[in-house]
Length: 359
Image 1 (cartoon, rainbow, N blue to C red):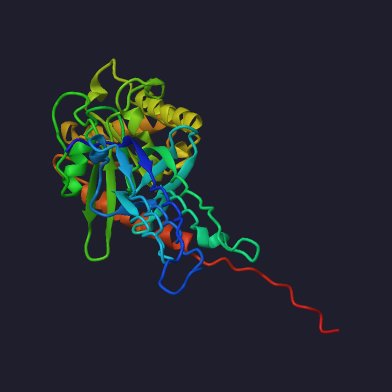
Image 2: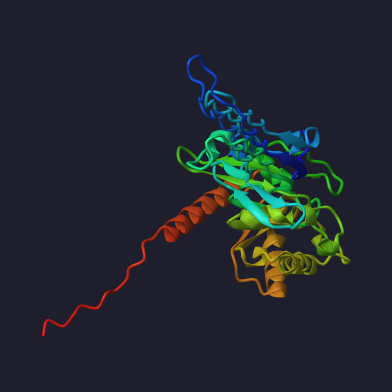
């Protein structure tokens, strides 16, 4: 199914039921007094992040959601039945915005925690409510209140530990196929990947991480060129970026690998400034791919020249995704990095409390 990461829906909570106007009428009780019951409350609408969903495609076909109205009250102090709540299931990682104001309502990154997006209307009051010592036979009732109605914009950010980025045909999809069970489309033309792909890299019991591939970026992406810019938001949740570079064109005089790498880094920075994100601040590893097409004696020279031109001092790996050369070591190091990062995040903060002078 085609990946859909944005949708707009209208939600309408149920209206409250009206209060009843009724008086007690029984044999031998000539002045029974008021007995009109209150109306029931309307049903509310909740959004619930659920496992097993990875697209907003369903919302392309059903865009209007209505919760049940509350029932009106009745005689003999009968309260109207409340309307049933409506729970709408969405993928984990869905961000909910008010389409009219742009306000962020909720970020559904936790499973099975419902979020109220439209509250049902309160039920109206029956005439019993208005009985008093000075008004023994009130004929006043109130109508139920209308439930909330709003237009929501849903935006899905995939939840992954590692994100792949790079130029089209750098070998990102091939790398994803090599290290996980994901089977993204692979072909010898640009922009083969048209929507994000997720894969789980398993290194044994209790050792796994999720890796995300997005369409390739080109220079000018932050201005709307290419496909990848609209999916850059998915990388904002990742903990590590792998910048995949195709070494194959290095022998071409017109090729400028260092310039291409710098251009992608520039696009990340520009996107972060425009979107108010910290994508350019995420740790980034350089992955030199397709080393199987270069002679072994030339690899060190090419990589050395590239690093000198970039003045790169971060982690670097040379791999062949299609031959699965170097991919196992890369995955092991990623797992170790993620585990160490997790330990740092959960490390308790020690606070030194000055002791009082016993004197």
